Image 1 (tube, helix red, strand yellow):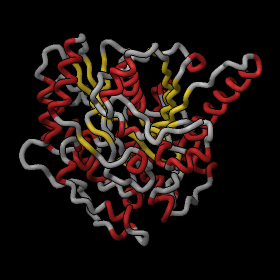
Image 2 (cartoon, rainbow, N blue to C red):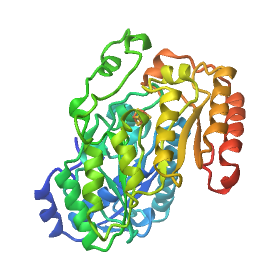
Image 3 (cartoon, protein in one colour):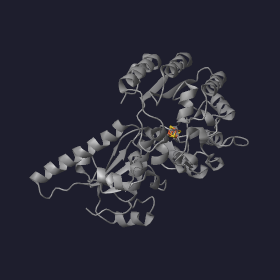
Length: 412
Ligand code: SF4
């Protein structure tokens, strides 16, 4: 089947929307893997389809166009998407055996696996017809949300942080904040539709509005083939400290002005842009949820350094203590990666000790899996056996999630 160079989504080509509306209604279906950002992206893709006159199919077996929104956080996540695609092909090939007119839907691949590049993806999955980089789906069309009370609201896309284990800066591109105007328009429209709870989404949600201040040294990691971790400054602040009230605090204040909005959450935040002004706002603004998700990734400064996380264990503890001092009802959840390249038993024990100290409400503990193309994959050998990683995962999972094991994420 001939492949078009780029999918023509209405977000990037509004003229196409009216053209499609005149045609017989076609059916789309979106199969989503991965995190909340992917689910939110799928809501925008659905909005784009419906703006072009498509209608959602009941299942992937019935659609004209099938979008597979992929996750690449670990190899297992990529394998799941490929397994799903395999099942789709088996299904439609079997159908063709009984009905020669049966048609396989047009298959569009998007999400984090796009980082592999078109050539590799088409070679890996020849049944794919189009590849859609997620940053080409804009915010021109209203997202299609199933929940009528709570809305996921992306306020930024991409990431500039280049944590050495993470594929996101490569798969989602550079960090880009939506304008205050565009976000507030969407909040207004959500209020008109009766929404009362909003979760602001961004890979570095609390860095919203700051990327223009970025000092850009992390680009070194992309450009310099001989890059070594030591080339980066020791004490990184990804962004220059904003003068006055940080933009994200202003945004929270603006959204809070709507009487109809009762609850505001945000994720995922980072410790490096959790300024004192934000801590004070969370403390006093009771519309902001008392649960704050703040990834630590490791309790060892040496591991954090290799991960290029840009903060220390001490800075993390400081942020949490300040937050709890503003309101003792605030609870914290976190993300941790175990078995990162070269993580010694002593380094792991530092995370264990921190877990005992922090009393996290929930911990999303992930087993490290090197992602090809990342700096971690390039410069650090993945030298912890899987069995040992799993042992470390179990220890942390028990310590952090012992009271809510039914809610904990399943290890992959
Ligand atoms: S882990 Fe680091 S690189 Fe990955 S999305 Fe989060 S901040 Fe960006």
